[in-house]
Image (cartoon, rainbow, N blue to C red; front, side, top):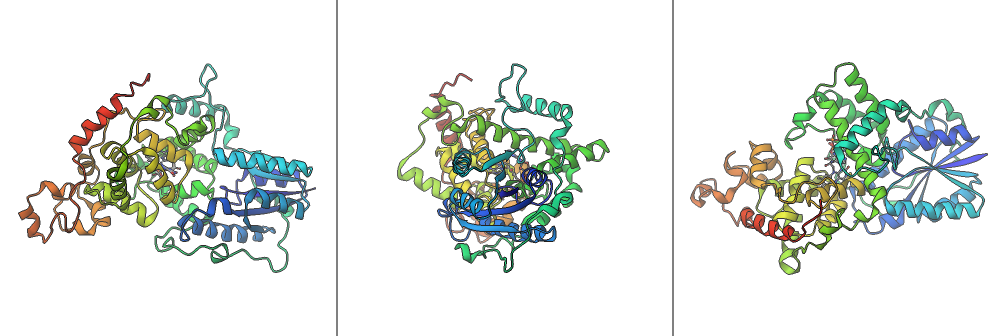
Length: 482
Ligand code: FAD
């Protein structure tokens, strides 16, 4: 019997649940990836994620070829292409790793139905997370909506069920991979209608090798992660999010490595904190699976009643935020980082999201969409979770009256303005004290640096203290039950 493995957000050839299952249950296994025109059509022609995927596929094909197989790559509507390919290759079954996004679930249902009509089966495995769906429940068998008790139950479950971390080996079964036909080649970026970006200049290396190199580097710093992760100018986090998004690393593999470090006493204070972040990722995937309405609505329905700013004023404020022209240096530097690199430091995601919603009064969904367009690591579950946290509309969100002050955040987490200077060179000549709020510095002093507010950098588009009062009033009408 023959089978097909359809790769989606699992672009690796090691510790891979679907590929392992296919290899251990079939005589011959084909591997395929579809550039889905339904996902790609609305994207700009230069998109770092598409270039990243392209790089991942080239490496995946090369690695599969070394193992004796190859990767078939097609371009079209994924649901149609998979059914067509399954027929062409005369396979009996298609294997995938499960996805928790509502659109992906609907697509997979469609694929399963059309395969079934032709007498073929679709098998879906858990691979993207450690625990999914109903695997972590409260004592009364309910799903969690608060993170800390979820995390504690998750950790208990990991100890109780060590199988959850068991690897899915590929190499011992590789003889069953179908070899490449003569003339086998992958489409180039331009074949699928895309252009190169600055991905390589940024030093972002796609594929399994890129993910492994980042983790190798991070392991040496993981002990200090709990502190270092707060400071955007410091290389304190792992930068693995894009690799977790596209599955060039295995989350099981990462958790096994962290556990081994902790067990050997080498994880410091940082390793358990980093593990918590991976648990947040599982948490938000679980929330999206059980509450698909969060894609478009507040997790707490009472918050859907909030009236956000609309009209030309809100549009102008939103545009200033997108372009990094709010006049608040930390927010603007954060948006410059996003626009120039497709990455934004976690603290800055919290600060800039909070600023859009609570200083500018703009609907969190507009910010969510902008991040979705720009983030290399864009993931519906985590992005939505992050935005609803910042907007106080989510499960276990920050309370609505907690409003980050963008100036004190800047003074605290970028005290010497190193991050701001990196992304806003026009402010580089200001002193460490002046750089966080240039409008508070007398114009004459700024002139001494040859700097004029309004000419070289915008004056703030909103007064934080006034905006804070508006926000308290705006949220005050909600009176949520909890
Ligand atoms: P590290 O600090 O090294 O963390 C390791 C991994 O844990 C990350 O790669 C990520 O997979 C996971 N992780 C860390 N923090 C979170 C979190 N709060 N929620 C869920 N998973 C987490 N993360 C995304 O992967 N995609 C998104 O689209 C996304 N959008 C966000 C939007 C907002 C408004 C906020 C506040 C956060 C968002 N995050 C998102 C979470 C977090 O900011 C990023 O995962 C993190 O900054 C990525 O950098 P890193 O890989 O160096 O993370």
